[in-house]
Length: 143
Image (cartoon, rainbow, N blue to C red; front, side, top):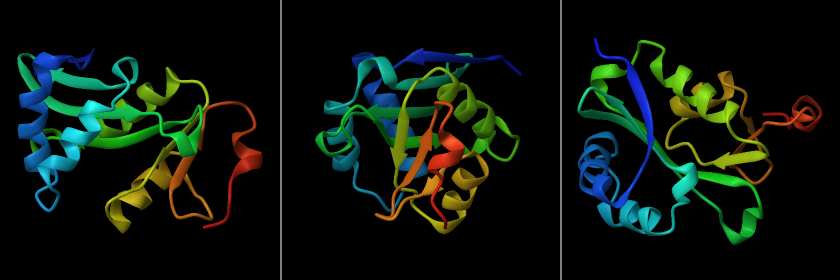
């Protein structure tokens, strides 16, 4: 199996991301991904590649309501690489290269539990947050 490569997403990747988005989020409208793509942070949005195949992506953005905190709009992995710990490895690597707070809304309870196992805490407003700085433990909210 080819080693996994992380590369910043560029405009040439949009159609591949859209195709994988449709597979990973069949209940979601592709227009939502296109809006997210349009407003993404180019330095904080990555594709995950095995050989020539896009096997996952993370689209990050900064929203006016979250200030300097990164918001993960979408984090997706192809079915072919799920269940092998790769998602956890990718998420931890992604978080390890970012300083500050990361926010997201999980699409299901199962995904919310996975984010919880990976250091995210549910906020009082219903989103999940991860603090990459040393005060993370003191900022956790009860679930």
